[in-house]
Image (cartoon, rainbow, N blue to C red; front, side, top):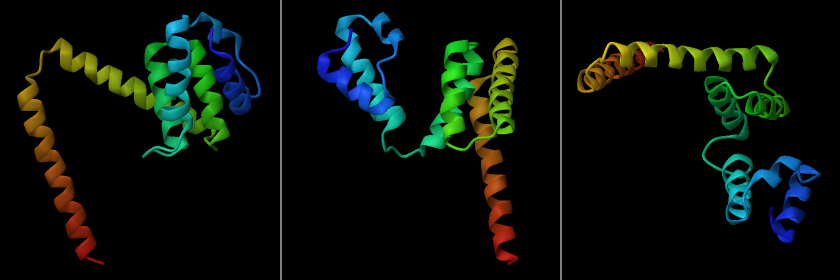
Amino acid sequence: MVSNETQREIEEYLGQVPSWLDALSEPAADHSWGVVRDLELGETDLPNREKALVAVGAAAAMNCPYCIHFHGEEARLEGVSDEGLSEAANVAANVRYFSTILHGAEVDLDDFRRETSEIVQHIEDQQAAAAGDD
């Protein structure tokens, strides 16, 4: 259970203290809210829209109906369309798919990193050339 001070803060942010917060054990309750407040709701390097989309993708990859619903609503509040939510889930599925392939085939990680660096360099060179055409 969160402390009275944290309850007041949560009510200010969310308009209520969701019942599921009772599932947090006391030593973790206030801290857990602090992480949500500071990382997900607070000012960080990522805009809230991007954080919501990351959360939707992670929730979809974990197959968590609670997180999918919550973060889907969060993303909608940030202006993400249903098509955008679907795309976020598709991107997450694509990452999971290729992760399964890479792990199953036991692709060498050092080779993968080297090839990725070469791909990034190629794309940067193309972008630089395209910028020079302007």
